[in-house]
Amino acid sequence: MPKIAKLGLACAAALSYSVIPTYLLKYRWIFRSRQRASREEKVLYLTFDDGPDTVYTNILLDFLEKEQIPAAFFMVAGSARKHPGIVERMRKSGYQVGIHSLSHESAMLSGPGRTGRDVKESKKIMEKMDIAVKWYRPPWGHLNLASLFWIRKLHLNLVFWDVMAQDWSAKETPDSICNKILRRVFPGAVICLHDGRGENGAPGRTIEALKKAIPLLKAQGYEFRRIEEKYGTAGESEID
Image (spheres, rainbow, N blue to C red):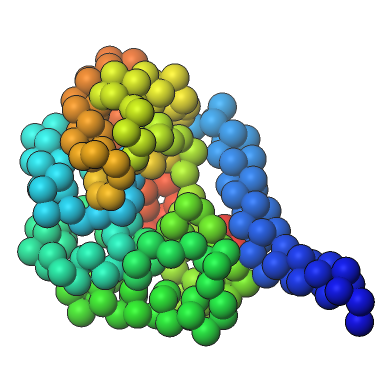
C-alpha cells in the first residue's frame, strides 16, 4: 500500500476514534444548552476541575461554605488518592464529586487499553474513599470510542460545560476571570473553573474572582444549584 494511502487510513482512524466523537458530543451539549436556555430558570451550576490542591481547594471550600454555594468537583483521581482528607471533607459537606481521569491525560492520545484502565482505576480510587461516583468529565473535553464505552459500562454520566473563563492561564487576573464569567453565563449554564493545576497560583485568582462574581450574579437574580438537579439523580447521558 502506498505511503499516502497508509497516511490517509491512519488519519481516518484517528478521526473516527477520537476527534469526531469529541466534537460531536461537545457541539451537541452546546446546542442542547442553548436550546434550553430560554426555558430555564435563572440558575447556574458551579463545577471545578483538576483538584484537589493542598492549598487552594480548602480555601475554596471555606468560601463556598460561607456563601452556601453548592458545587461539583471533578477530581484527578491520582491527586485525590494523595489527599483523602480533602475528599472526605467534600463528602461530609455534601459536595458532588466526579472523576476527571487518573492523571489528566488526553483521551486523544490514549489507546483503548490505556483508556479503559484510566476510567476504571479512577472510579475504583474514588469508591475506596466512599465516593459513589456518578459523574465524569474528560480532561480538555477529549474523548475516544473506548472512553465512551467505559463511561456507559460503568454507568457514569458525561458532563461537559457551557462557560469557561480561562482561569488556568497566568495571563488572567481576578477581574478578567470575573468579567468573563459575568459576560458568558446564561440561565441553566454549567460553569467550569479550576481548583488545581494552572499557572503561577491560578486557583488563587479563581477564588478571588468568585468573591467578586458571585454577589454580582446573585444581584442579577441567579441562584446556584447542584448539578444533579439539572440532570436528575440518574443523570442525563450525553452518549445515549
